[in-house]
Image 1 (cartoon, rainbow, N blue to C red):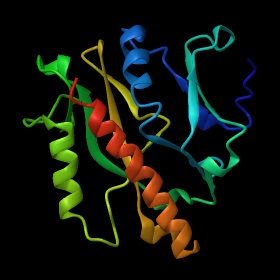
Image 2: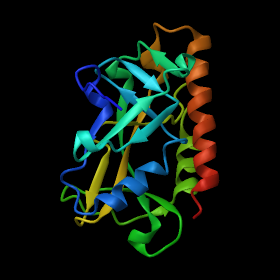
Image 3: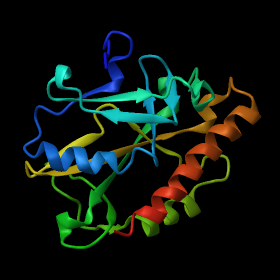
Image 4: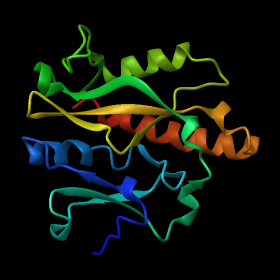
Length: 192
């Protein structure tokens, strides 16, 4: 498998700094079918992809969009339509509980005082969002991080539909639907 990083540098994620690479790769693989990946370099949102760890890439994780599923990629998504949330998905093992949890990180990169079960937390956020600005989480390069040199966590970004004003309402609805469907799948898998 060949990967030319010049084509899209946002699809090669460096794992060199991770103390426990195996735990990081196992953790991120859980989201392969459940979270979309955004690339600001090419302004594309990938909804169908595979994750590889090629030997020739060293300590990298490479996201490869399915080349036969062209319809599963959304083009022309400007970077200003993708916002940081400040929310992190953490493995329950980190807090000695089963499943996935949602938290925030403090400035010293330690966990905030509250960790809530992922589905309950995400659904609460979804319920509070206005209908024209739903919670649509996605991943971008750099969202996979590590706590305490051994625990992988995923920061979440979100698509802001209002930032897609140049897209038709049908296209915006398609983006919302695919992200929401994947999130529902993640809810089913998040209980451990």
